[in-house]
Length: 70
Image (cartoon, rainbow, N blue to C red; front, side, top):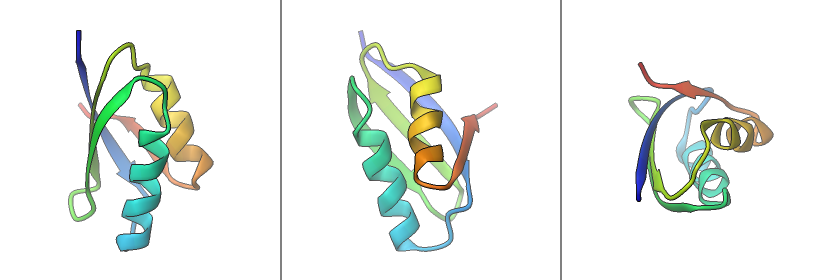
């Protein structure tokens, strides 16, 4: 079963930032697809058995902050 998780990501200011966040999210076990919207400061992640905490930690490791979108 696929899970869709929406994140608000802060700290991204350029294309390099977007790429870093995409790579970090794709590195999380179970992630199948990632879409990062730099202008909106949002990321959408699709995967199986993906935990929000793991996604937030991966983004934090790159120097950005993320939280579940409300």
